Every structure is written in C-alpha cells, then in structure tokens.
Image (cartoon, rainbow, N blue to C red; front, side, top):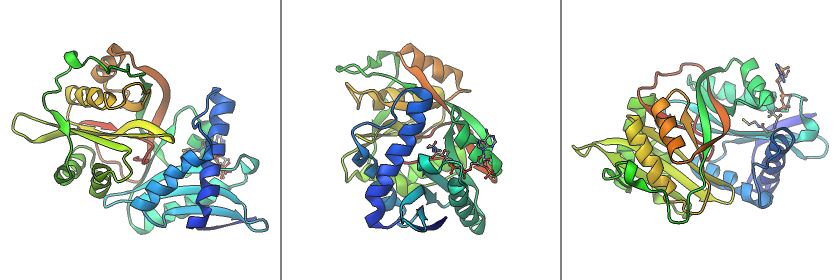
Length: 307
Ligand SMILES: CC(C)(COP(=O)(O)OP(=O)(O)OC[C@H]1O[C@@H](n2cnc3c(N)ncnc32)[C@H](O)[C@@H]1OP(=O)(O)O)[C@@H](O)C(=O)NCCC(=O)NCCS
C-alpha cells in the first residue's frame, strides 16, 4: 500500500501538516489539549532544525497510488548512538503497520552502525509505548514533564545560587560534549555548537562552572511557536541543575515553558515544586541496545529529540 523514501524539500509542508495533525489528534482525543497551536506551519520547525542538523535523515511512507504521505519519522545519527525523532502516522492509517515499517528501517540503520537506538516517548501514550516495546525497546528512566508560567518580572532567583551560571559561548561546546559523555555515556558536540550559534534566534544556552572554572552543567532552551521547552541539559547534581533551570526559565518571562526532570531526582523535583512547577505529562526514555549508566542528571527534550 505504501513505500518508504527519504523526505525531500518539497515534502516539508505535507510533513509539517502531518506532524501537527497526527500529534494533535492524540492529545486532543486522549488528553483534551492541543500539543501544537497556531496552524501546521509551526511544525516546519522540525524539518528546518532536523535538516540543518541531519540532512536526509527523515523517512516518509507514501501511498503507492495517491502519493499522500501516510507517515514520517526523523532520526539522528550521533557519534555514540542513533536517536529517533518525532514519529507520526496519519490517523486514517493508524494500525496499518506504517510506523512499524518506518521503525524497522531505522532499527536496521542503527544495527548497521552497531549503535544503540534511543528515544523518549510518552508514558501516557500506549500506542507509542507499544510500538516501541514490541520492537524490543526497554524503558530506562522516567521523566516528569513540568510546566511553569514564568512571571513577567521573572522567578525570584534568591533561593538558588546563580553566581556560577553564565551564557554559553561557542568555545564551550567541546566541554559540553565531554561532560555529557562523562555523565550519560552519549555525545553530540555539533548539536551544542548549533544551539550556541543560534542562527534562527530561537535558542539560549546557559552553563554552570565549579569554583575551579570546570563545567559542571549546561541547559539549552528554545522559544518558537512550534516549541517552548528547556533542554537538553546535563548537570553533575541537583543544585547545579536547579540553578540552570531557574536561569533558563528567566529567559522566558511571560511564557510557560515545559521541561523534563528525572522522576528519581527527589531534591530537584521538590525544588521545582517550590517555584510553582506543575506536572503535565510523563515520559520514558527507551533504548534498543546498550544503555550506559547515568552518573548525574539528564534533562531530555523533544526539540531536538534527544533520547
Ligand atoms: C504511535 C503511532 C506512530 C503508531 O503508528 P501506527 O502506524 O498505527 O503503528 P503500527 O500499526 O505500525 O504498529 C503498532 C504496533 O503496536 C501494537 N500495539 C498497539 N496497541 C498495542 C497494545 N495496547 N499492546 C500491545 N501492542 C499494541 C500493534 O499490534 C503493532 O505491532 P505489530 O505490528 O507487531 O502488530 C500512531 O498512533 C501515531 O502517529 N500517533 C500520534 C502521534 C504519536 O503519538 N507519535 C508517537 C510519538 S513518539
């Protein structure tokens, strides 16, 4: 019924429309909220950022007779792993094996590279959990999605030590990649250089240094009509992570960004409750293949997908 091919530039509007329609379909029917607002054009963000970072790494499933795009999935090859980006199928074709076919291709790709395939998927979405679980993925961590309306004058930072937090510069990118490798066993240095360069004027990156000037944490955030999130982020401890979150939240005065914190980091979760954060969803990180131990705090995000 359908064939798989690599997304082309002329497919971008249809893929953006599919992401908007398919994701909103699940959130609106199951959660009573919209994931995306503002029209399908906001989801062009995925095509733009992902083609910048990983050209030709989006698979589409096209109907053999009509040419309609029934499903799409981005993937991100990195030096240590492959991560799976946003997966969508048109609701008219749910349950027809479209996502499974896209996933099989990306599983084969990561197996050829002898690398683990990683993703973050909603713990509330059984369709997506089952899709990955049946292919052998194993959940490795639980994350609480928290949302916080940042007052127009910002969050009072006095309860947090922000003295060691500063804006990142391009020279920080290699140390960020090294810290991530040390803490979570994965690496993606070019992503960090891309966020810090910030050609689209949508990213902000904070870093935290210890008393010796050594990097002990960083946190990225994005503000765009298609995504307002904090992450990805890496910290050695909860105190560093809390300070970075407050610093990045204050880049979003008057907005309500979402951020994912590891559910097993009790001190961090309590610190977020203390500033008014509320839970809005739960996510699992899932891995097919080897999953390195985490020796610190990881904050994943969906833009870009960072399993
Ligand atoms: C999640 C989504 C991508 C699945 O796409 P799909 O094309 O319908 O999925 P497929 O038909 O290829 O496969 C679904 C698999 O899950 C299995 N499955 C579904 N519900 C299940 C359940 N409750 N328990 C066990 N298995 C289940 C099916 O049997 C099938 O496995 P099989 O091929 O081995 O039989 C689709 O529902 C979607 O786009 N949803 C909205 C957006 C979204 O949630 N994206 C995922 C974000 S990570």
